[in-house]
Image (tube, rainbow, N blue to C red):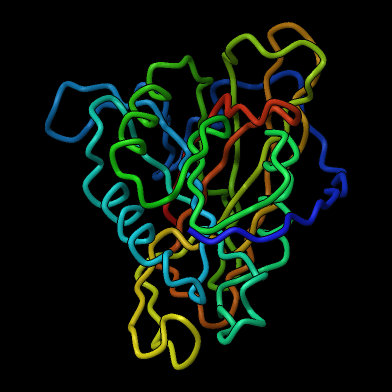
Length: 279
């Protein structure tokens, strides 16, 4: 496990409005509309609660490939009964000057990890770091802890997330309709941000330099972009509604893309809702 000095960043507030009311009928239409909370697992009478698993990783870190492999198992096998694991691989950029520049890295992901460190009262960041539903962090390659954390998170109440493709779609852009309702009790005075992450799986790199030189690394759930959709209104029984667009960048393979939407308290970092939709 590699530890580096933390850099504390401040996230700029994005001005996308949330709605305090929702038309429950219209947004449930669409061929790919998905109600993720309470969804039944295929071929089994098991209700699966979405659980967000973030992995802060880097292709320049020799300790990271086992954690990347664990994330792939969580994604592909869905091994925890009652949990639908939604994986987010956040490739940080602070390893890039140490021999290998990770092509999937972003300063934004390093910033997000720094915000977690601040929220947890930590004085540093490290890779690989896994965080489950925003509140449980540990060394990213620890499978036993990961499975226990996912199982515990799946028992927590979550809001219902409904995602659907918007009516207008193109090869270069995808519109998404987002609705979230029936939020569990929130922490008083802690704003709830709704975020959208676009991920791509089946990615690989032949690493030529650095600690993983000579290795072919494979990845799932690599976050290509993450953005804020809005803030939940601070009213009793509030609901969230928004429409957004995702630009498909050159080089992304659409068949491997997924939109992950989740609602997270700003201070505690607790995830109150999550869902996903294939793009």
